Image (cartoon, rainbow, N blue to C red):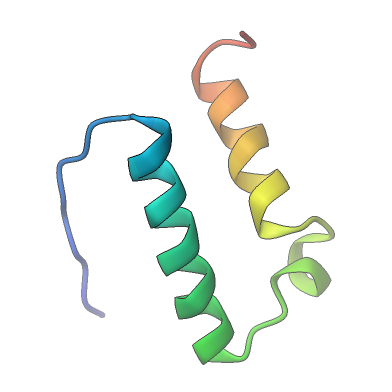
Length: 56
């Protein structure tokens, strides 16, 4: 496995760019994220972020 560690600021623009790149990466893997997790990738990230931020 290969891991990429990057430091990012949490600006909306940076997060959006990461989201777009992540989505392209997942689509290249041909893995239907929604079928696996029952939720779209965007909603998954939003939910995770809300949990991480303590529900704000």
